[in-house]
Image 1 (cartoon, one colour):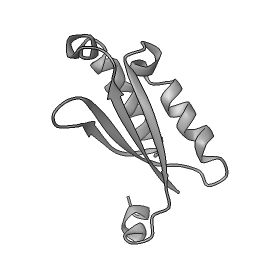
Image 2 (cartoon, helix red, strand yellow):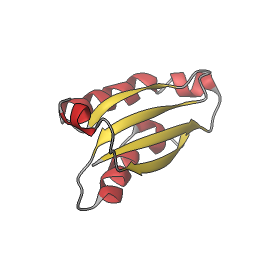
Image 3 (spheres, helix red, strand yellow):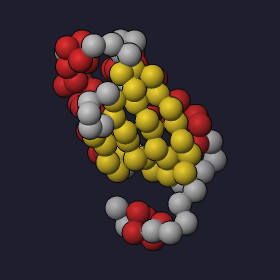
Image 4 (cartoon, one colour):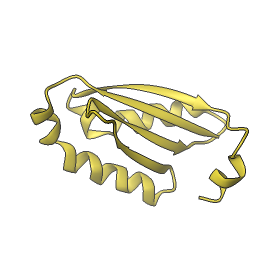
Length: 97
């Protein structure tokens, strides 16, 4: 199963930038684990988005863990909107990533 995580900044950009390297290091860890497929900031930079591969059994628990361990969330800098996504068209290509 897949999910999108929409991240919206709650604080001014200089506060976000102070934690961005820790946030990106965390995302690299998720990528190495095979959980994160893609991520990046929105344009204009008001937040960001993650594309995630999650377990079918309890997708919201996986998404809560992703959010709870993100340095942006831990510092109170962002809100997170998890969107579980049942991909139909294109799933075969995503499964190859």
